[in-house]
Length: 490
RNA sequence: GGUCUCUUGGCCGAGUGGCUAGGCAGUGGUCUGCAAAACCAUGUACGGCGGUUCGAAUCCGCCAGAGACCUCCA
Image 1 (cartoon, helix red, strand yellow):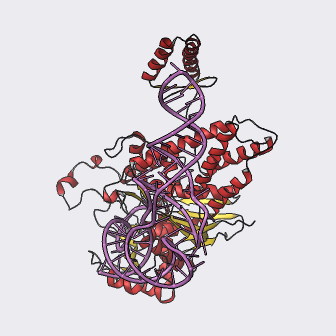
Image 2: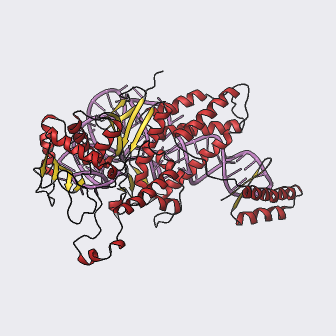
């Protein structure tokens, strides 16, 4: 059976069979964070979505170059707005250097991505480290005739570009609609048309991040960095470009136009966009002031959070929804995810000690096919997970001896589940480091519980209950089993 | 205002023109001295009104509600 990997292409609004430009190799570019605030739940969505894609492509034996940028240029303006002299006169050292801000939040982002088990991309370029490339890109666009200079700034002429190129295709917009719907904004008089966007901007006096260029001391336009850096690391044409849906317009539309203007051909084969995380039905975003940071999720320190949620709970929560659907945050949804994830991981532990039989009563290949078919259908992780819960049922049934599995099948499915859950979905076992002190501690708890077994054997319920109750009050959870006990420290 | 999208059972969340998604909660059971945990089993659904069709929650139209983008945003 032919089972091809299909992905939804925003450009064509259809699912398409994925076929890389060069067989066996994939170039993908994803818009990373603008590092001016703590990483929040919204940042985790594209990171996890495209981490899944990255991992799955590697699982399919592609050699992948994954580029995810850090935007550290263009949006950073000195805090002292409104020309307040008192603030400006204060000692310079009391103000944060822009790069200090960038460093702080980049570190925060990386730390949280690690916790979420998001693999680092192959290359993580920073906009500030590619000013030269961006200036070159501006020059190329000027040479192509689709840009013009105005008062030291360079603007991209959308209407001129649209005369013999597509503009608006990605975001489904028409030039006429764009013209009639553009708002009146300040500082638009330099532009020939409100549709035009800056690719190089002359810096105002208060703008602290600035670089020399042939046109002015200034900084590159926001959309430009992605064109320049994707071209540099992936070539003029590459396979996949990803990002949040909110970036389709204007960012990606502009990027597409710039890249084509600079390179003469369309750059991206497949555009993929993840949907938003919502809070009470509204997009969660820093600018909306309703974003909950990942640090807060992991610590539980936020008025809206009933408790702390582990990074794996967040990861599981996201993968339980399709990446192109909005996903609504709530405590009950996260707690449901937490329990579901625990059940899945518990079954993975049970998997290690399954009894094998002569024959299998279960069809492990059918299971594997269903999981992979779901992934092949535009990364349908929720369906894949649904089938993995069938696997949970299967594992538990074999454990309870109501189903059987052959040794050969056992090795096969164990290997597949390990690969799929840990390498593709990126789940991790809960981190329980067994240091030597920990082992002694474990032995002591076992000792106490063995005493309890003896007490039980003697029908000394008072002692048995005392041991259990006291341990419980210390935060242990005691479970009696057929042949003994299990415990864990909550 | 323009463009587009969404509306699924107590909650989250898939999917499909006719065949049980799944998770959590609930209920019943197994296990247990009791309990907890675990495991097994299980119900309620597709915003409203029309239309197409042998058959629609799934396609079309209208209405209602919600959201996204149009400005920095994942």
